[in-house]
Each structure stands twice: as structure tokens, then as C-alpha cells.
Image (cartoon, rainbow, N blue to C red; front, side):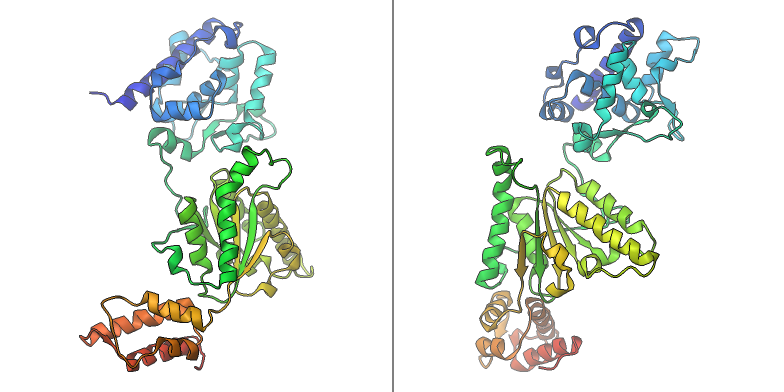
Length: 442
């Protein structure tokens, strides 16, 4: 028994096959007025039907999408459609299409779309070019594109290529998160913690809440209050402060409480010693992130946004070009971009002027350290009465990350001694161990 999705996909490809037959038999007939139409109501609540309605596809745009889908879901359909009309196997040049390296059927091209939509009408065929321009929503929303061909070949002879995410969207309704790779140098940040677990100064917390306010209300401001012409899209902020002071956790919580995916990019891994590779790595990232409303968290921003160098050789020249390229992509990104650095002074002032906010993550004071100690100790752990957390917080200058490391070690030490009591000796051992790790004295 066929499932509902299979029935609906059969309907759309039957429609496309009938449409091709109609166009072959009626090469001069107007597509808009006389071509068979796909009734979206017949698709019901299928993922494809919902997608077509959400994006408000025209009939011509539906045809282009179905052509791009055909090789993946009905690989023989285009071959069968042409063979029915030309059983002798004549080469039907007007139809376009090419053979793939591994696919044995016809891969549709822009010329295929031109033939079905425009037929022999020169004006209509020219109009088809606009569907593959940079301003069309096919391109803006990463739905499909026309593969580039050499300058010696006609522009529209490029293959119709679907972005992989679209296949997932119209079959499952969900797009899987991208995985960390050389093509996508970012990893998704998630946290089980809450805002109450983030201990920052009152001033810093107020600035973070302003970021959350932008994430929650800026889209309404742009669309409903029509401010998109007056205000620049996107928001750029610099987080600076010592390691372990909450920069990464803050980014994770902003995403969690605004339902926006957060991706962390370690710029030190993106920068390549090979000329041109850094721009390529960054281009892959921004192209993937476009139109998805992601929060991009650039860690180790000093790797690219540090002080620009005087040009002494080709590598210096290209290094400065990398900075300019990244700056251009950062400024044109429509979502929230967070750059993180341990030191504000490491970032070139030419870049800091372009940030809407610069937020300092300072070493926690004794008050904040006391709260961090108390809120992160497990409830089952018994505390030696000799331990005074206020005194510990005043005496030892530690980051939140340092304190969590010490708590982790102390808990394991207590368990290894088959005890449930954290003694002052174990605590002091854990603190000394953390200072030693960072080559510090307490």
C-alpha cells in the first residue's frame, strides 16, 4: 500500500510529464493562459504543498522546482516524457538537459525550463532568465540555482541544482543541522543551563538583555513598522574578557531563549596559510547561514580581526584582503553576529566602530564568585562546616570556568575516598591544582 507522500509525489510528476507532452504538442501556445495547472489543493497538507504555499510559488516557479526535483525522485520521468513524443530517439535540442557523470537520466537545465514555460515564444524565454537572478527568491532563500557553465556555453545550459536543505524540507519538513567539516567550519552550541546559571555583573547582564530584546523584536520592527529602509539589517557585538567568564554560555543562552540556532566558529581554525582558502572557508559558512536566522558566534576573533599589518609581501596583502572580506560578510549578515576576544585591545579599532555593542565580561568579583560556588555544588555533597564560601570567594580570584573545574575535581576526589563530605583540605587541593594548571600563584 502506497503512503500518502508517495501518492502526492506521483501526482506532481504525472502533472509534470503531462505538461511536457502539452508543450511538445503546443510549442507556440501561451503558458500562462493555456498550460495545465497544478492544483495545490490536491497536495493537501503534504510537506511539498505546505512549502509551495508558504513561499507563494507561481505556476512557472512550481515547474522549475519540479524539474529540479525530478532526477532525485522520478529519475526516468524526463527520459520517458521525451521518448513518448520521439520514439525513434531523435535528438530534441529545444528540450535542453544534459547527461550527468553518474546519473543515467536527463538532468534538466535552464533551457529545459525555457522550453516548458516559453516554448517558441522568444520574449517568454528571455523572461525565464530572471528566475535565476540574484534578486529572485530562489537565490535569496537558497532554494535552487543555475549551475555556472564556461563562457563558451550558453548561460541557460547550466543544470538546475537544488540546495540539499530543500530536499529535506519537502520530504521531512525538517532540515538537519549541518555538521562540522572543512566545508562548514562551525559547531552548534547548545546548553542545558538557564539564565539563573549565568552569573555576571549587573551592568553586563543589562547589556545582554538588550541583545535578547533585539532578537525578539527586531523582525517586527522591520516588517510591521517598515523600518527596513532606514535601519541596517543585522546586529554586530563584541564580547571581550578573560577566558571562562561566560562569553560562550551567554551566546548559547541567547539562542536557547529566542529559539535561534547558535553556531560557534573558531576563527583560528578557519584561517589558512594558503592564499585564498580563508575566503573560501568563510564563504561556505556565510552562504550556508544566509536566510536561516542563525546566531553566529566567532570565537578567537583576534585571529582575523587583530591589528592589520603593513604590507611587506604577498601574504600580508592577502591577509588584509581576508579581513576586508570577512568584514564585508559580517556587515551584510542579517542576523546576530557575536565576536569574542580575550582582549579588546587586540581588535582593530576600524572594526570596533562597526559594532552596535561592545560588552565586557570581567573577572567575577567576590560577590559573584560566592554565588557561583554555592549554586554549582551538587545537593548530595556535604560541606565541611569549616569552609566559609564568602572567605573562599574573597581570597581566590577565579573565573566561573575555574570554579566549575575545581568543583568537578573535588566531587571526584570525594567519591574516590568513598565519602560524601567536601573537606577544606580537598577544596584547597583543587584550588591549588587549578592555579598550577594556569601557571598562577594564589
